[in-house]
Length: 306
Image (cartoon, rainbow, N blue to C red; front, side, top):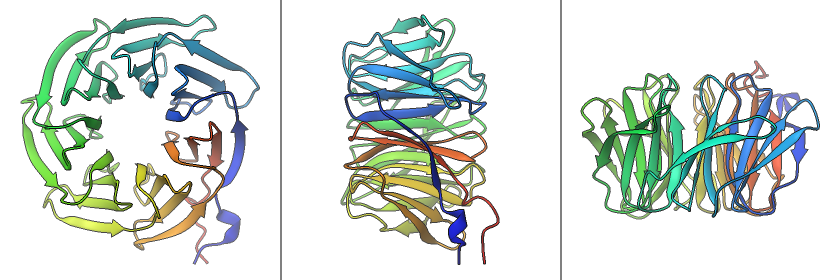
């Protein structure tokens, strides 16, 4: 059982976007958070102050945003096919380039922060050097839009998911696909490595959350926790919990050790389309089609069992 005093609590509630929030990323020091939206803007907020900075440069919906591990820059992706690398000052400076022939769906820095991974509706994933915006390699094998791609904790592998109903694991050095997970009935729309690199978690349009053992390739856990398609899944940094977001307007917290949902959060109206944990996991953020951004105190990572 769980002590009710350990429920996740809302710390901050922000408005400002006029379109669905599509991406959220915490600064590594957890003192600020950046969000992006279909309103074509990004907003950086100082968590412990009222300061907020809005950045406009994309010509279409912003689809994803991600802070570099150093926190010195962040990158954004858009339906306008551009990627922008921002130096978040009052008058933001940005570098941009066009990495794909279609909408750029996701953007991720590698653990060292010197490389950038992009995925796109052009069915490819690409790797770039950040400073020079120099192309390094493509990962080709998906046969439909690539919805998300990200690095393993050690940066040696990449996981991607696509509308072709597959998840693929790629070797960064050889740029070859080394494992494929197939789904028959639904597409995967989001995927992430377990913090220890031992498994991957995936969100499905069927409403299920699946966790696959990376070594054996077998399905390890499956949760039918939502009443609608699951939009996002994120492991807590300690690897014991998972946060999920759905079109059914709820967030769920899953206890992966006990194998069950332990909290349902109902603050949003409409689809919850973006979630993120802070580096230490003491906070998480959520945003959705209601244009609201919430910062939560996790609490569930404390010793709250009774």
